[in-house]
Structure formats: C-alpha cells, structure tokens
Length: 279
Image (tube, rainbow, N blue to C red; front, side, top):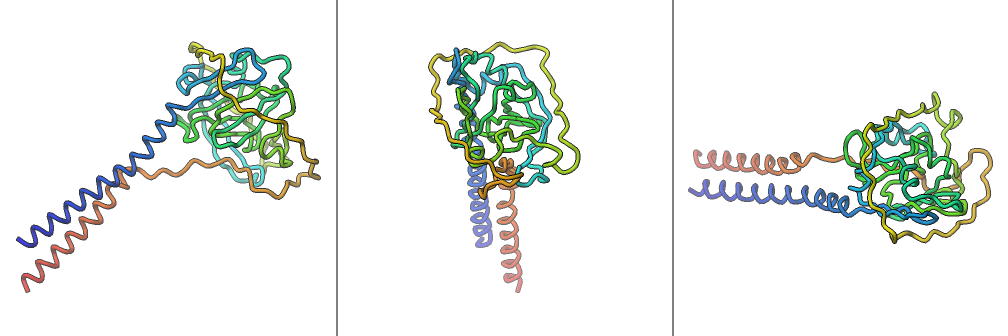
C-alpha cells in the first residue's frame, strides 16, 4: 500500500512537470505570433502617399522569391545565412508611396534601433526585397531587407520604418566608417564572386493595400561622414554580423524529457522498495 501511494505521488509530480514544460514552450510561441500580428511597416518621408502596412498587407502584395546569402564584412569567409527568401519588391513599395523628386537616399530603421541606408538606384533593383519568409518558413525577425551581393550590415532585420530623405544617410555602421556601398567583390570574398541571385516573379499580382495618410515615422537626422579609412582597413568596433536564426528545440523534447527522467526515478525507487521488502 505504501509503495502504491509513493508511486502515485511520483506520477502526479510527473504530470505537473510535463504541464509546466508545455506552458514554458507555448508561451514564447504565443508572444512571437502576437508580435507578428501587430507588426507595422511604414514608408514615409519624401513621398506623396505615405504607407502604413501590416504584415498581412505586405503578404497580400505580389511575391518575389530570391536565392541569396548573407556574409559578414569582418569575416568574409563566414556564411551567416543562405536560402530562398520570399517577400515583396522594395521598388514596388516605393512605387506605391510615390517618391518625391527631392529624395536622393533611403533610411531603414529596425524595431530595436538599428539603421542602415541604400541609394535609390540600389533600392530599385529587382532582387532587393522586403522578406518575411526564408525557405518557406516565417522569419523570426518578422521582416528583413534582402540585398544580394551587399555585406550583411545592409540586410537589416526587424525592419519597421523606411524613410525617404534628401541627404546622404549614414546608418549605424556606415557612420563609423564602413563602406556606404557595402559591395561584395572577388577581392573581399574568398573563391568565385557571388553569383547573380535567382529571382522568380509572380504570375498573378495581388491587390495593393490601403494607404494611410498619416503613418508614424522616425525623425532621422543627418550624420556627418567620418574620414575614409586607408585601404580595406575597418574601424575598431564590434562586428556588424547579421544575426543568425536561433536554434529551436522541438517542444516535444522539452515536454518528454522531464517525464522520462521522473519515470526512471519512480521505477528505480519502486524496484528498491520491492527489493527491501523481499529482503
């Protein structure tokens, strides 16, 4: 009788631990999904029709698929990420916003305060997209600017604001002396030059989202350009490596592991009690 009560107590503890593990796994997933549902991307500044888009609005626009890789400028032989990116053409967003003639540069801001910039010519390339999926899966950073053959610090993640400006905008790393063009070449990348990315255009365009006349937008201020560093030398500052996607542990493992551990302990205790009883 005593052994039965002890076994039932251990079984109860196992169920409680399993439930706690399941809650701990589901909570961040729910928070991430909520953040995606509430995400907004604004296109403002020197435009005739400012945009304030939800993730659903962006996904309703014609899709473009680009195969490209992210490389870090400080570690050119290190592949940060590679895959097939799905998103909307940046040039389409600019077309919907109607760029003013005074605009000469574009500032990009992330939700966490990071910034970078592109000139209009680069921004209108057909392979430059605002991506929300990679290899068919939603991005953990919700939105990322995909700029093939540019160093990783141009691939801004958590993208929230695009602002058209009338000056040469310098982002976080560009203002510290990193190349404003950020071009990858055979001189900086080991092996052959990066190949031209594959681009797949949609056959059936989707309807455009509704424009918002007064979207929120940051207030960028021009940053003076630092003096040019000699040769290919870079300033002594942290590396602008594009963040890697976190390794996700399957929720089943997190739930089953404590159950197995407690079950093994319970069986060991029961075996010991039976042994002691028989002795």
